[in-house]
Length: 588
Image (tube, rainbow, N blue to C red; front, side):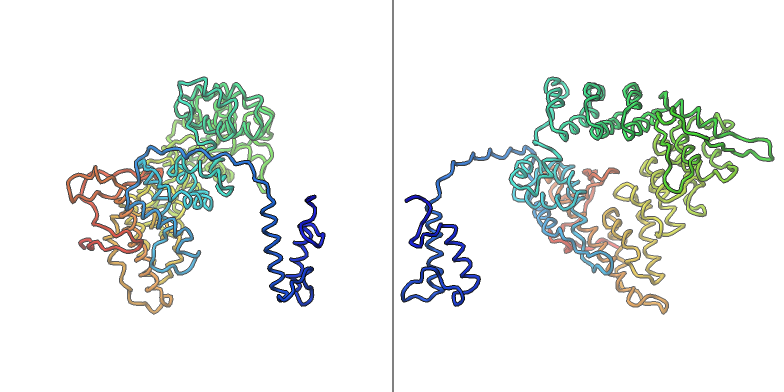
């Protein structure tokens, strides 16, 4: 056999197969088989010929060399997830599509999709290992939601990285933590230098970040050693890692980076230096800004006067001032804002008559420069994490316009609030809501610690109740309601019981609004009980204390991580089914 023909017609295997496919597509009435079988219908003969060629093609294949067997998946030394928590995880992953479809009516069932991030944070806080059977669904969930990836990959552990090598859809896991190998110990300098010199980019970023949190000087030494040979985009990413553990020891390196050929690198270096109040850059900026801002005492009352820069010289550009303003901004105001933003806030009391931050903010500013000057002070307070100036710029939460003279927008206020401790932050936002309601509170609530402190939780629930009494539809407040489901303390479920009844409908209310509000509050209560059950299921039972004791739900830190609660009385037993609670109702 010469290998070119396999049947009596002289056609090659590929040609014979194409003839059969053509006959099947056109129909045997229009295209009879090339080799009709006596006594058999044409369609049957065509199928017989197709089966014969298929067998010949398979029999003619040469056996391939056996592939290398994959290595075994690495072990995971973390403790196994409790059975009830494993069932809950399977339920949350199975409901990844979510129960809500955007705006409008959602019904009374909890949105399990929004509970998955909180569940993962709690599981990671307890140090559990992911069940092997849940890894594919976990990777699929993380693939679809980038916000889930850090927590999902931390929970999935090294076995998920092993599994990701077999599915191109999960390659993001390898990019996030390539190789899955543990980073070298801080004392193993040889391994550290080897990984820094030979590792993939993501591995080097992870190494630099880990070293900055443990030995900042070693991280800076590595970065300085290869800095001239790094690509501009890589230099920018590496430089950003210096935010962790930033100190005066980083100043010499950052000063050199001010001369970088990349504008973005120069700007980042200048921003980091301006966060160091004793840096030479901060001093240079203070000199420039002080020349622009002064106190005029010639009138009946002191007034701040502003003379913005007339040019952006090369020294200003080297120190991170961007010369070209965005569209719609004047050059001089643009330059002024950058100078004041980078100036240490401690400069201004001496410059403006020994006044406190609150007194300075209360001073009038001449020639309509107040908005620009105060906005720059806002940015400086956020950059320098100065709570005193943040309080002064925020003002009273009950003030008209809901903020101090420096708070130019809700986004600015949210950033200023982030500089305060969680308790003070929650108290300010509660006062804001009590005075101004919920219509502008969404951004402010987003920076508050979780779970919300009791005064803040009460303020949110009371404002929602007022909105219901006003006769509006609940989906006008869907953003706040969604935050409440994730952030309200589960202990508030008992207090919400009174809101589950459908109220009498007012004449001026939107049709059916009362029923929709009852559904929304029922969903909120059910979600809170579900969160309490989740925390209970994740609590190790061998540390729960005496038999019959049920621990209280875990508290969530200001960074979003759930922490084991202090000892005390807990919730009742909850069924593992989402949205279904069979515990005794709390006492009213």
